[in-house]
Image (cartoon, rainbow, N blue to C red; front, side, top):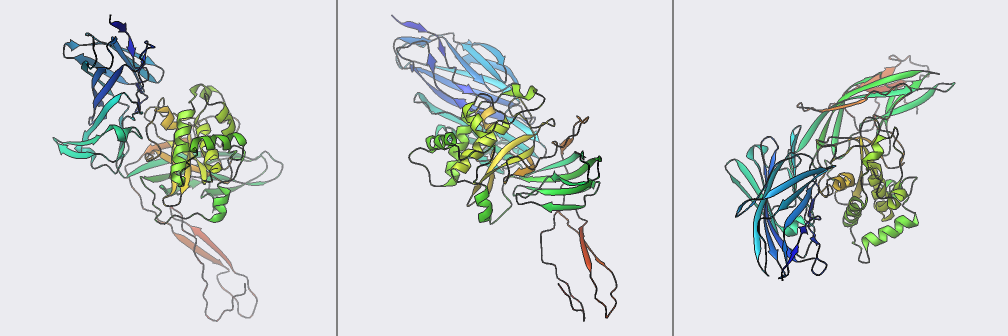
Length: 542
């Protein structure tokens, strides 16, 4: 007698762009009684709407059971036009949105009975969550497939309009590339997609305009000298400044690479500082021969308040992550740590409702994985990386997101973001985002970060300072202080030095002291250089 089984693929979980396959059945005797094969097409339109077509073949591996339905959860909040069919016609498909995901349950019209019997059927839908136009760049991402012994095959074809241009970055490397009818086609197989999903960028740089406000107040009984952190230049971004009002008394560069604008405040004085400029973000590092001074290498592997790399729990978990056959390269170690953090922690959006978000730190994140925001993902990665001897630090800033439910932001009242970077001996600093890899269910944010992460502040020597733009608030100020928009206008870096000497004239025969003041009146940093004085018959006394 053939037993009837209700087959649910609850773990066929596409959390946004991630596909996990692990059949779960009501039959304890044979929980792996069916295998599946997939031919999937992601057809991206000019407007970014993607038509996803899944051609699925379900194969019965047992003579005792048959399937009556199929259920999968997709990490997309914008699914439309869901259709299912087999050779006999349409199949009933029920769609239910649950939080940040959508569950589709399909009921079969026919039984798949007998060993080796198959049921080919098709499921299609549209979504705006797989491709988006972001300024000068198109970003496209598709599923990762988790290993499963009953997944016979999985072939994916990505199709994009030819007008997108040649991808400037795409991982993994496609098996084939072709062009037809104003479309570009890229194909991938199961082995490639089990390690990472497809992530493609069309455009080699991104341009932003920014308008930032900083609020400072001196509550002391005496004057103070304080500073604000300006968006820095880095291996992945250039920054220019059109205006800084009021003008700082000086701008310095700290060891992390931050620009610090200094102000002197009188007793009880309160000021608002307005900073206007533009940023250019790059797909790959602009540093040709990266190097890290030994002193910084040491500092970037030390334990701090929130990065407790010396804690026994952190060390024990690191040993578990790396295993007995720990890879030799820091890149491979960092990848294992990143994958662990992204898979272990769970994003808790309820914490964003609090007036102020308490920072938990790495150890608390490790022991309480169900209540994390971007700070915990970043802190835990940095602590584990430093425990492995990998220099790592925190980046705070603006991150553009087309869907904040899938790619959330959670820093400060101005909705900023935090993500880590680590040092690789060959590539230099590498930015990653374990938070978004977790919330999207496996989109690869390790091998290629998008062009949407604009750094406001770098924290390496300290886990607490400096603070990014958007964090400088005073009593009574609750307005929005960060405005970042896409820009169509590129720019040129133009430092311009103005040198003044006082006094301008020197009287012969008398000792004189000369004051030299150098001002950069341009829009960008002028690198440090040797200052040389030359004079006719003068003797210059140091």
